[in-house]
Image (cartoon, rainbow, N blue to C red; front, side, top):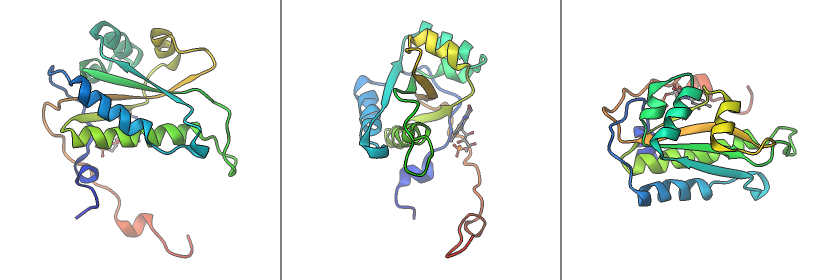
Length: 169
Ligand SMILES: Cc1cc2nc3c(=O)[nH]c(=O)nc-3n(C[C@H](O)[C@H](O)[C@H](O)COP(=O)(O)O)c2cc1C
């Protein structure tokens, strides 16, 4: 048994029904992201929720016409409000911060019985323009959320011994 059934059951969902997602459910998904950790607790993020069908279709176009992006009743654009802050290890914090927020949102979406998919295949400038994201900020990823048409197959992961070692590489 895994620690969380949500971790074991989450799969990327790329086919959604037209059933809307309730506002309270969307709020809980956003709350999960809001509570996610970030470097120095800076929370340099903004989550732009897209439910309007016309706007979703524009986002679909910006995502190279991938149908599932417009098909999902909710698309959350995870944006950073700071593209410069580096952590003590010299690495940029924003891709990591936003990944935690997205992970927490995906797990809450799974808990709510919804499918979700992270999307990074999009023209960022187009999405920025559609959502009026300020020039100096970035749209790091999109998260589609909705009721899955079918539960997709779970993809295999590498075996533990390939990805874990103890005390040396
Ligand atoms: C950083 C990141 C970027 C991703 N970008 C895309 C994407 O642009 N389009 C897409 O369909 N899936 C995308 N995915 C989903 C992955 O393809 C998926 O998580 C992976 O194949 C494992 O499948 P699973 O999520 O069903 O376990 C992305 C996932 C991550 C973590």
